[in-house]
Length: 266
Image 1 (cartoon, one colour):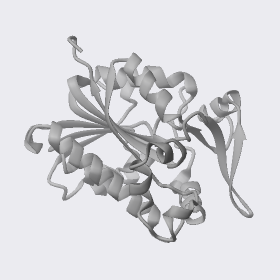
Image 2 (image 1 turned 60 degrees about the vertical axis):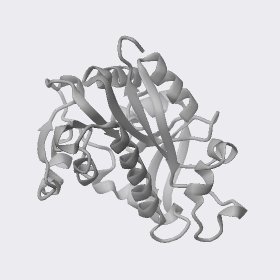
Image 3 (image 1 turned 135 degrees about the vertical axis):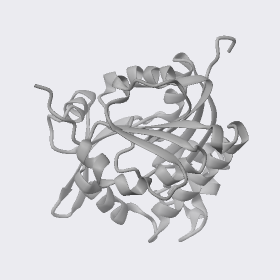
């Protein structure tokens, strides 16, 4: 019997507690997230056709947190997630957005649909077993039109410092246990009670994407949680980091990238 999939961070309790403890000042996390996705939307606007013509897939939509953003660039959306309870919890988010949104309880590997102009895969790849990344990126290519676009967001590491953690809430807050690949994979398969996070090297990920038929067009790092004198108490640390190749190698908890599916001619 196949056990139904359940996302390991129920009600995002671990994530919300981590944000409370880690953000450099109140409200920064959401502000950084919103500005990063606004920039991604502006980049997409240069590359996509009119919104009314764009068909999009939200691959791993969870409770629909990205529905409003996606509806800003696409009028027709198919949203899939294997966690039925999590998807049902966000059903109301599809209302009133001016887009036709169909939600399906399924895995992207099982989805039967015509290729999409745009695919969004938001904060999925950091939680899957390591052996599933290549099949997932390959499958996302299969459901994207040649020349179509993929928006991928993920937890990133400093360049050259890829690592795995298991996050839990303890009596003193969120504990991030650094683990090896095998233990991470155990947790990602549901064998260990924790939120598994693969902090991915952005350079290695871009290289992997190229090998699988994706061209990276644009990237932005956000959620800059570490301290550095030039950031100041409430300065625009995201702008500073993304404007400096040296700082960009070191800072940023998350990244959003825009990839294009290569056509037969390149």
